[in-house]
Length: 422
Ligand code: AMP
Image (tube, rainbow, N blue to C red; front, side):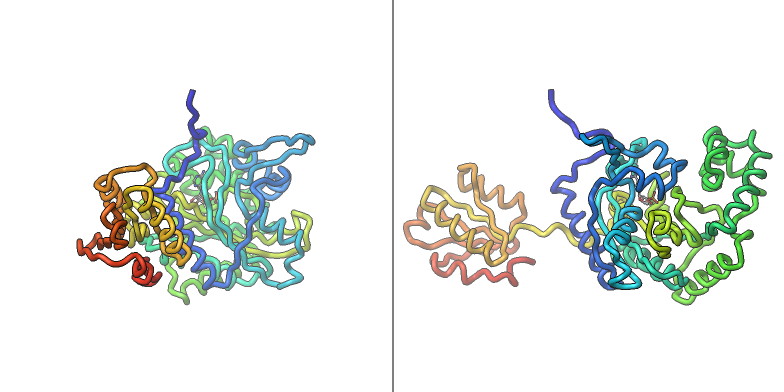
């Protein structure tokens, strides 16, 4: 029997991992320019951290979490998202004492037991950011601008920013009741899934993609028209400031997020170049979350973005500008003595930060040259029997095809980090 990776999980092989590294570097760079600093939290937490924050009735908590008991019987869950963990860490380490506004970002795997399909996995990766400690609308805009700037820096084109307000504990409950009444009237015309949702989480019916639901809901009142004065003013400021920064957005009165902790601003970034799973990123405000998790009331806003989906768009738009960094030097060495010499030189080059490789399969010189070619190496240093005798090595520039012979002692001086790592 052979083993395979679990359904909904993927290996990221070297042919792809370099792209992930590039993307991660870019993300880190943009986060840095916005003064967000990295946080790394454990992959698993107490189950109730997620059920309390995300909401018992949400899809994530009710059917998608990887929950297990450890040997002591404690219920633990692989993180399905990061906001709850970040806010937990913020409270646990009293980060607000260090700074009233904390700007954090993360990159890492998340786990949800969803039905795997293109752009939807069970172990997937997200990058995201959380700004915790202020409720002013310009912080919402800062976070939206950060999300948009990241896609820009990654060369992703034609993203669409959609925004909405999901209200607060004052205006959402009465709206929810009103929505439920309206939806109950058209219940028979709703899809089976929406009929089920109507009972548990009527807000989620709003963002159903199904056509029958869309047409049944044509006349449904929207929360943005029933916000309390505070939420309404907040939403108006966010839109004004987005416009002032010339950040294009579309208002989407039906945009609600699949997590209960959101208040006020909610947003998504989409790409038409993705298939059915067109959401690249989503986020919003969570002004009540810290309190819900036992901390002092601390407003915050953040977003999470799927890296697999980002990769899919990048592939489609061919936005990986430069290729993988290639190996700088390959030693084609024949015989024990040459091999020993090559080992030593390779080690010295690597100490200088220059990548170097040699043959470990006892291949002929010809086969070694073929290997160097396959790896698209910049220079090959050839040390055959002749070279060993004369203590001279042949250096071949694989781009120009030029060759020269230098004494063993000179080899190192030819390779400085600056001229070989291009
Ligand atoms: P969410 O936390 O559900 O708002 O997700 C934020 C982003 O993460 C989405 O817009 C997707 O890009 C990505 N994402 C969420 N769930 C999955 C999944 N199962 N597989 C791949 N990407 C996902």
